[in-house]
Length: 392
Image (cartoon, rainbow, N blue to C red; front, top):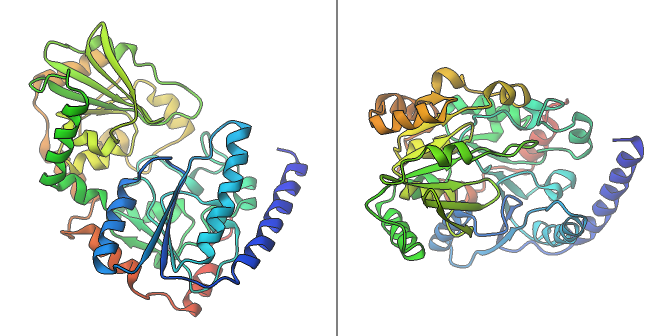
């Protein structure tokens, strides 16, 4: 990217700062704003937090702004206008909850009393991200990260365990005081018999032709920035007399195969978290869904057909080959053979859970909402935290 583009971005940031300065004149309300660019649809973690907030404080106002940036010029222009909506609600909120990078939060100077909590969209840290991979493979350009103030202005960043704390600290370029060990609300969802029954009933109502007696294999591949997934080998390796195959891709489409020559392809109706309630087995590669699948106590298998290429472009925080809680294979026929044996090592799965997902809370969403509602950071602390964001 040439210098002119950086100059344009700086001018754009200055323009936004002026507009936001005017918006900050508005009165702060008893309001919590939720912002995501991971999805245009409902967000499970956000919904669970809002339900608990309403129980504790019926007067609190909540605003949810879920919108992907998109890839086309039209979609990007639409997102710019959406940003001004974000700025209004940020300026008039007591707390902002994020599950990813937010341009308006990181690039603007906020009222010192504003609390910003980054809950991130992954329960744990498997693949390297953020500041850990600047100028590397799938990572962001370092100069652009500095220009866009990547991951600045967070009061707190949530992580799932003491072990994961160091990885999130590095990825967000944060300090110890910012990192809070509170697993995401989705952990409560995955452990709930009520939600499991509710999801299962809705699934079979939505897909009435899917046979309940068949075992369900859920394939959840990670997002690949520069390459596409090839599902053909997996599809051809499944014994459809015994199994149904559910493919949940990162771009929010799932394909449900019931035989070699017949499949259903529908737009998103069930999230990956919901499909974990349906699955009997989970196949993934490098996706952070391994943490959620572990919480759900599902047998997990790893299809790492492009491991050497992937590790060059991305890399892991965890010792992938030794710590993943399941069989790792680059040959899909051998992997399906392992599933057929049905001899999964649950001890290794439990060891993985104990290390990477804190299990001390019975109600994670309540713990998080208590943090949201509590006045924990005074003005001096906020200034101190902001100034200690490390230079890169």
